[in-house]
Image (cartoon, rainbow, N blue to C red; front, top):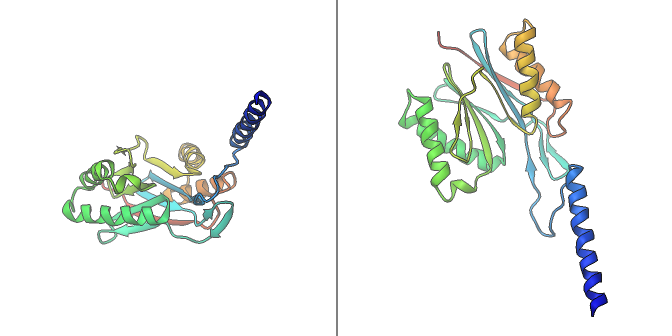
Length: 215
């Protein structure tokens, strides 16, 4: 009996050690029957020299497979005066997008207020809390990050990235803003290309949209 206990304890330890090792290597373990995780994407926005640009790549990854290479993850709202980029589960992102569009209709002249109202619902509504996505919202005067934790964050320098390659894109964009003569759309495209060369969930099928900044 004692030998059996030692044996099963050893097996449990080996399984735990294997999961830890795979996790440290960036390889996910999945319980049998668990849904495959959808990964996407990189969204970057830069406000520079009188223009705000937002861009995203086109890759959608399901588990270890690339399911789509040319997805468009940007939307224009309110007669093209508001641009939204989203990262995360596609269905969840579209559900949030519909909610945000409704909030914009309630507060058409106040994008930050619409974002705050959505973040409050996202945080407190039982159904919305289950949605796994991030949103970046820009208009002529504001750059905002919305999260499911109820956060509405405006970056100090007008550079914001979300998704799996967001940190790489932000680092590249800040360097280009400081040390190049590129305009905002060119910076967004170049930074996303750099992120795509590092992050395996980001590709080079890049879409960029722009708005003029408020004076």
